Length: 358
Picture 1 (cartoon, rainbow, N blue to C red):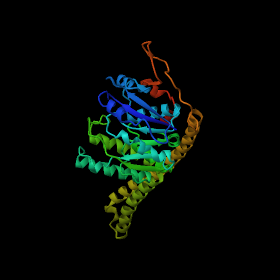
Picture 2 (cartoon, rainbow, N blue to C red):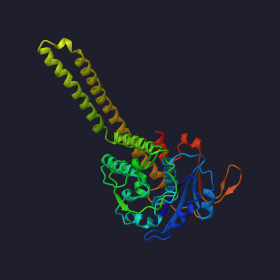
Picture 3 (spheres, rainbow, N blue to C red):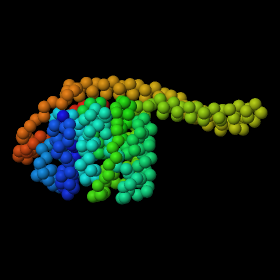
Picture 4 (cartoon, rainbow, N blue to C red):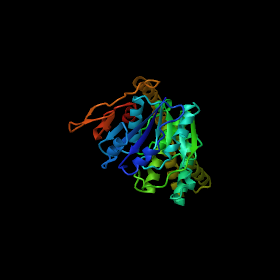
């Protein structure tokens, strides 16, 4: 069984050695452990440090493309190189890599498809009370949308089985954390949680400029995923609310009309008519959303078959030994390398990109 440990990096030359030093080299049930560095447009010596410390697998972005794209490209690379399990960690040494063995064990034993580390955010000293409260609220919202019961939905320290990755498709451009949980919940994948203790803070997050931007983008991703998988719950609720909003002023006007004073309260008719239009639009949007949901289900089934053709249901033999890649300057670079640049966003390179393009 082959494990890929995926490390998205953006200018992590100082902390990456700490991450690499704590990744276990021997895990029961795992035959091979490979390390993959996803260089998301780093301008420092991150790649050079990784090569010097023995990393052989790289995915390069010519500019910063974000965590979600880094996750997708790394997963695509790992599956193509025969990964049975993929662990995602961070290049800032936030997570305790020495717990990777515990993280993958439920997947190795066949008890889980996804294992998510619980950072126990309530005990993290550098989290403010507001941030701790927002983390808890965010996890509750995701659990409601996904039908799960996870204490730390925002944690990026995760282990995925090959089968789970074949079924998940990330289409957001911000972060994959919330979306993959909602997808996994609705696809009835088995998810477990593992309590861990995080390492001391090394730097500020580069994923978002402020807490409020993080909240806004996370809310957007959660809302879109929820509407995508449960359009009936959203639009039927909206339709009924608008219908009630129409019934109240119409009933009021009917009473006033019966008492001979209806002509002086035309605003009730206007408000009722406006609410009735809102109800009709909600039910019309429900029909469109349901059709879109059906199309997405069909598309995801097609993508699963495409992944099966491209990667196979079982791990394929990985390429061993140095693989020569010609760089833009004409030099040779050792080791397997993927390069992804800005133009690649408009050219699907794998099933995940096909999903994003559609």
